[in-house]
Length: 506
Image 1: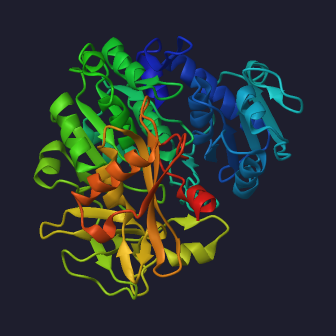
Image 2: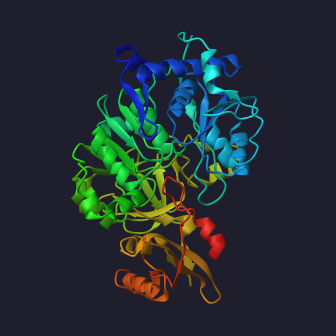
Image 3: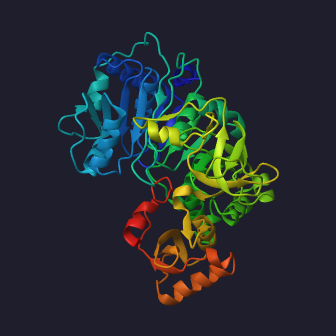
């Protein structure tokens, strides 16, 4: 389906609700305004295969621009507005944007001049050198478009281990109202999305999953509840207020909600939730068990990547039977291989490859990185560098990313194991384990800890934390020391930016 189909039958139905501003974007308005965006882009000379970039906090106009580009056969890139001006400028330049839409707030936040894209539009305020969004739309006709080839997003990896990489998929062949996007084909039947779905989005739309899930929900006639930013108690309040049926989270959000006082958690009714999805980062098995105990068997996890190399799924029942697993591959077999590409048997740890009919993604302007994702002998096996193992039932367990592995005295240490244990300690709000140089062993593990509110960082707490980990995992996996920080560097999607910690402590 397509939002225009919904607009014909139920034009007044909310497509997107933004509680923070009380804005409601109806399907009739989404159809009209995205059509005007498309007319503007065509009048500006953009043609199928050209590129649009947008940079904003969570705003209903992002969905107007998104659908305006998708119904025009264009690539669209959502840019992280929390980047610096040079970082944001790199993405805008690298993707080859011919048009740029920004919020005034985002333009001010980057604190510098953005690239001189031929067509620049701003909303939510005035910025020198940009056209006003409302004036641009008012000048466009609200007439049906002559042909609507389906476009595609071209998103960038979050850059947690270096400079972001653009993932450029091929454009679909067909019209936007006839060709469903891959997310709708896969996730709609698995998670039961339909026109009655109310989807809570607590994460930023510049990230792949929130943007694509909001696109999917608006394509099938559901309603998106768009939070400006995640807040643990506010999320629960919105679930109750809007009778949310579907939601998507990252494990750090689960942790923050679980650490609310029981009296706070229990005052909100979450019984409307049919499917609570989590992804983007590993979830400790104990955190998942507690969420299932609280919300019921509605917790579902998928493991995937912006590159689209593969996907695994696991529901609540499977998660309790296979604690720590991210599920079974559904788009093609998963393979675990050693550094030379030799496939390993069940139980052994190695690089995770997914087998597909064809590995079609490529990193924009970086053929060497694209080649590095392919298996040395099988062109249709691809990886994003994650490390893991399969059990005898083909359930996948992620160990860590290859870039985060600590090699101490010739032994591999996977930080996620210690992180999973430390996350459960009541004195910790957030934690990361990294490798730091050591004259004798090459590297040793260091725990970087953000204490819970009201907890005083001190040597006694550090000793308590190390003893706590010693009781749960093998001694060689336990961090050698602890440092305390005011806040860990995480993207708003919950991913640790570990290279910043390495730069600071390494």
